[in-house]
Length: 390
Image 1 (spheres, rainbow, N blue to C red):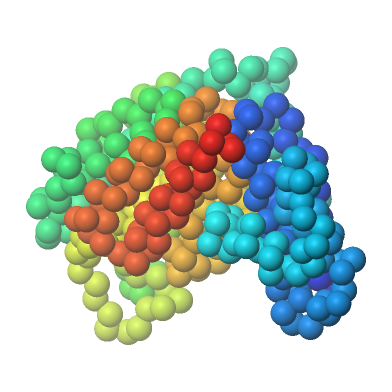
Image 2 (cartoon, rainbow, N blue to C red):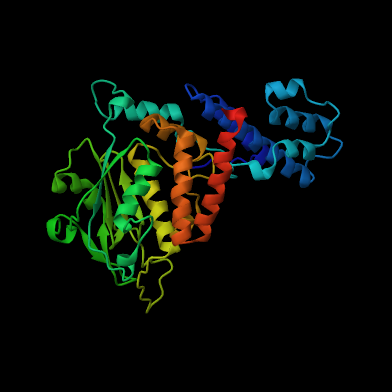
């Protein structure tokens, strides 16, 4: 639960920046410099917004000077022209269009609800054994991707991105999004045949459509597929899912304890369903975006990374399908640090590879969200290619 106290966006951004900069131990040099720059820009932009709203007056040189101190690195601060009094001039140093991450504008994050890098690291090292700590490098990094039902999309046989069919492409996307993770594309494992006796299902009272209880899937897939329990599983089903009897619907769910995640393509979300609706799935940019968003989000949960409370991030919690699909495809610096520590990849190369793959997707199955992602990746790669960050 969030605290009920009211805090200005500027103060909130300052708290977040102080928190982030106080918890970046053992960061690689590139990411540390990047995180410092982003945290500073968060404060500067919030300061500028407050000034525009009249909370800071033009002649308030003390606050403006503080904003400039935040915006500039120590080296820049020593050579700064002290005659620059206006925050707008500071924004020219750190303009909005160079701002890659946006802090969440909400109440302060409660201690119970947040997961810092140190909290995640301690949890993941102790999760493998109750007796002794396991080094992250010793944890197997293998994911088995299982199609769990035959698909019923008329145009899916014609799917082609760089010569890959639909399932090959999904496996490739997982490899690029999670470099360092070994992704094994398994053959069809039809749960309607092999797991029918262990899966709870229901017909939803509003939609009249069949749904699987997702917990029965992620709790039993290792045993049913004979995959080693130290490996991860990602399953894809075309039947709608629900998390518990009193809840309506879920696009996907992951259990880091069970090391298993399951995705379902939500054709019949009860909250938006109208009587008489019949949806025939067709592969297009919107459906592919949904696939990429849910697959990347739930797979990240498998590695013990919880919902993000700091920035607009791929790991933000969502309460509806629309909210989930409106979130970015990429991780904020806090969540990226956790994933990088777990998988040990080169950050810049990962973004370059993602840009190449997402561009190919946008050329074949365009969508507004993916176009925004491609433009974000271009700015991200340019930022990491800047000699100042090398």
